[in-house]
Length: 484
Image 1: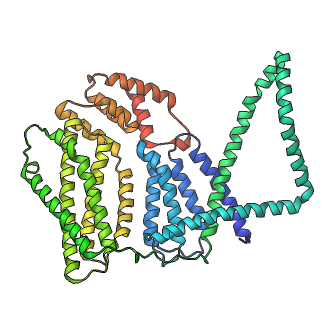
Image 2 (image 1 turned 60 degrees about the vertical axis):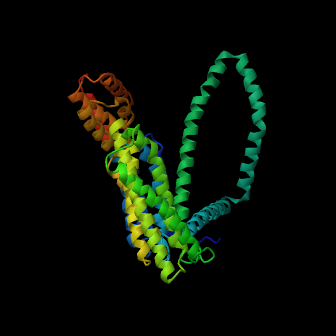
Image 3 (image 1 turned 90 degrees about the vertical axis):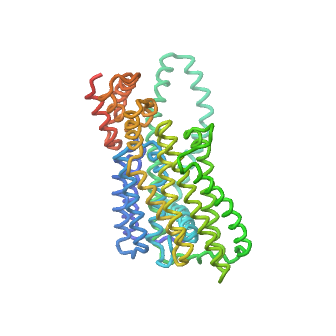
């Protein structure tokens, strides 16, 4: 790989170095808060400056991904949800890498194609190779300025240090045993070394980020990138008659199951020996798993049976329609089961998240039903966009707050609430406990929990700009005002 660096390349490298410094300050200085949003602003400012003369492609999908990236980064400053806090540390960089590749790829390369993701992986590999050659180029420049003599001297010094290490180890131990004052002097050195090691670690992180940003975007600037042809599934096909037979058998089973569901579950009656909560717990996950299997089967049939015609094609479409509609009924049944389970045992983050996921699956099935009869629609393109919007929506609506509000509403009806679970919901759960205490201070154990959280807040409250978070700041303020 031949590297030709111009003035703008060196300016861009210095900007990437500054972004690397900001990344280390943003992500390795305690709990992440508003620093993620600040970093995204600076990073994309540098990106758009570097590609100001570059014709960006796939702008419709690109701007959607960009908006989602900004929303997810802003959630670090707004909310305090443990699950998404951890997931977004991986999701946001993945979306950034995808967005940069999408915006700089040729216009005829669709972001929802498998070949695009293969090309993106190739670009990442090329960026690693570019950094290797760039580092070699820097060493050649340095070597040309200072000559081979300096390199030989530095090598000899390093060899001398390595030879001295075992002798120093033995001699230092003997001298420490011989003199107490010398032992105190030597024992203070690790504190100095730890100070040095911290800075070495920081520099290493900054350089990793710097070369990552620089190499990847330098590779994206290349316009002579070899485009892979879209992957065709010509070698993989399902026989139409076999497909129809399988679908008919599945449909018969689901029609029978749906008929049983309507006889007692949807009518509001249950067989003897079961409560609603027991019935819900017994069948929910089985129904959800079967629904996911149906979605996989439907997607595979739509993708791999494109060469059928006439009556056979319409029969497969009809069988798929029955399968999708039956899956919709299964989803409604699972949704009702989960609702009854929540009424019996309370609301948790996982249960509400599963509820939302079922709504997402219902949207997916609705689109798939339309796709069965309209072949020109793109199935995976919609799945990808719907998944992005769903994930961003789960971050924006603050799931913890929904759980807290639902549990408080349930408490007002039944006087049942798990305050210890709310205490585990990070800052939003604490706000719910404060709200409960202001209305019902006599709840057993509530006052003690809030006293514990107040003591922890006073001890661990972080005032650094990187960790600023609106919800955590509100909790600290509310706990300070609370008279316990």
